[in-house]
Length: 372
Ligand code: GLU
Image 1 (cartoon, rainbow, N blue to C red):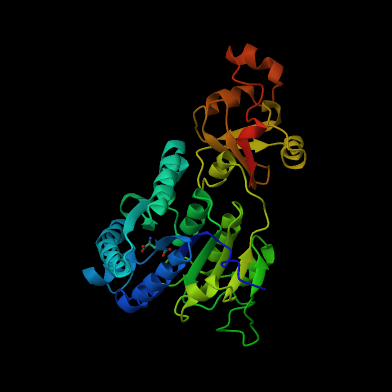
Image 2: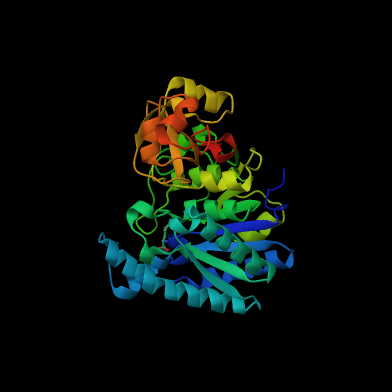
C-alpha cells in the first residue's frame, strides 16, 4: 500500500509549535531548513505546497521573556505579533536557499465566514501557487478574540485544505501519529497506521488536550482530518523530526497515521457553509423537519421550526439543531430572525399574510443547506 501523498498534487503541510520552536527553546533553524529542503524537493516533483505554521506565540513568549504561556489575551496577541516576525524571517531565508519565494498569509475565521473574503483568500492562494511561491499561513492572532478564533492550527490547516480543495493535509507533530491508547500510560498502545477520516472510534482513542506551547492535541488532529475529508483531502499525521519525512511520503512510503477521505466533494458553496465554525443564529427543528432534512434531503419550511435563537439578518448562515441541541445542518436563511419567529410553525401559504411579502416558501432551500 502506497502513501496517499504520492499521488497528491496540492498539499497542505502543518507544523506545530513544539517542532518549530524546538519545544519552546527558540526557532529551530536546522529543522526549518530541513523542511524547506524537503518542500523544495516536493515542488520539483510538480507538487503544490502550502505551509501552515504555528509557533508565533511560542517564539514571541521567548523573545518577550515570558516563561509561561500568558493567560491575558492581549499578552498572547502581543507574543503572536512579535513571534510572527521571527517566523516570516526564517521561512523566507530558508526557502530562498532553494530559490523559492514565500508569502505570508494571516487569516481569521471572519475572513472565511464572509463569502467575498473567502473567495478572495482562495484566489490569492491559488495565484501564489501558480506563481511558484510557497504560502506560509498562520492565524491572525493579533486581531481575534476567543469567540472568533479558529483556535488551533490543525483546524486552520483543514479549513485551508477545504478552501483550495487540496488533495492532502500533512500534520507534522512531536508524536509518531495516533496510538490506540496513550502510549505514555499504556504499554500495549499501538500506532494506528491507516484509518478512515471521520471514524468516531478514532476520536475516542485520541482523547486529551495539547501541549503547553500549541493549542492542538491529537483529538484536534483527528477532527481536522474529518473536516479535511469533507472536501476530499486525505490526512497524514506524522513525526516532524523523522528524517526526510516529506520526501519519503511523497515517494509512497507510509509513515505515521494515514486517515483517508471517503466522502466525495461538496459543492463549493456547501463547503463554504460547512466551514463556518460559528454561526450567528440557530433554529430548533421538530422531529418531522429533522426527518425531512436528514432523511429525505428536503428544504426546511417554517412549519418545522419550533424556536429561533440569536439575531440574524436575511441571507445569514445559521445552524439547524434538533430538540436535544445537536447541530444537524447549516444553511442560508431566507428570512431574518424576527421574521422567522413570526412565521415559524406556520404553513408557507400564510407567509405573505403574516409578513406582507414572500422571499421563498422555504426558510432554507435545500440548495443552500448542508448537513454537518
Ligand atoms: N497560531 C498560534 C501560533 O502561531 C498557534 C496555534 C496552535 O498552536 O495550533 O502560535
